[in-house]
Image (cartoon, rainbow, N blue to C red; front, side, top):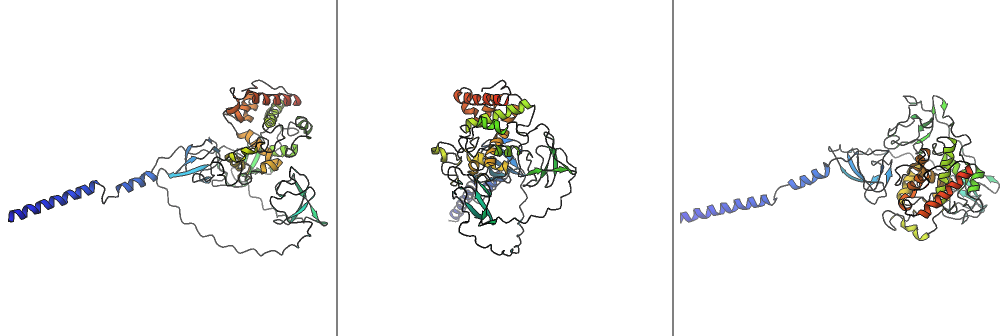
Length: 474
């Protein structure tokens, strides 16, 4: 009897030990797998470091500030730390996990003190009914005078498009609108803002601009390629965020060095190498869309000092002819401010049809700027919110022309170089076609379209009195 009891006790002890071993094997009571998942999430290797001068295609992987990112679409010069979000956010970068060493926790932000409210100014007397307040989206007839409530000024419609003022904003589109008066009362002259005391020139004084460098607010640099001085007037996360003074007019403005203003560039006597009369000969005013003014083009080229100002007189005129030839092809000889095929309007959204917040990014302007990511990139470079206001490209002459010159100076397509660089380096007109639409037209894709561009170019080069050069096709 005693032996039987002892045997049963031994059997029970063996069963308990086996059960414990099985539980351990199945992960019972262990947090190892959870720890491993955490380590994998926060300890991944860092991708190649982001470069402000490099262009990235969709899906490109980079790292910045201890975090990995992937490109949502083509982007250049957009800092991942300030231009990122979740997939589908509309930002050029998709934020990923932290990489390398574990980042220092972000301290809790200091609460922003509540500002003392500004006293409400005395209301301006209501104008007579003949000068109604301006309403967004309204198409006003020629000669109509409205009051712009935000600044108290009056504006008059001085030019009209297809639908009167085409829903434009008086403070943005100066082609449609001019200063107006209401019942004999002129627009009040605003009190000028006192000129601030100039910031002392930072040291070292007026160093040459270096690509990829983040300059502090107020820094003045010399741009060696054109001899001009530029000053940082706005900053991002890292000062000037590595931007180019001749491209990003939001970060940079004209500067002076030790009291010496920016010299007038010597290679551009007379400005744009195409006169107003020659422009009208290329694009007859009787059929040209009113959006495409000569003055708007001249204004736009001022934002890109290298455009048609580099090289000999012949090279500058050849570049101007090449630019206008491609523009003529894209815009039906400057007749189209907007893409003709309205059925395509909803299609230019990289997130899917109808997924761009009610905005449409169809072809507009002289180069027929298309797709949401191109509107975003152009707007960022110009300091204009084109992503939320895409129709500015079809209603404001200077902005329309600026998008065309922007793409000419920065786009590469399948050419591997910009149209600007192709012309100033004597690579030939055919390389500009390859940079703009080479994937569809070159290498036998659309020889008829290529020939149309060549015909425009040779015609315009003849008007300007310069040879067309070699390598016309692609």
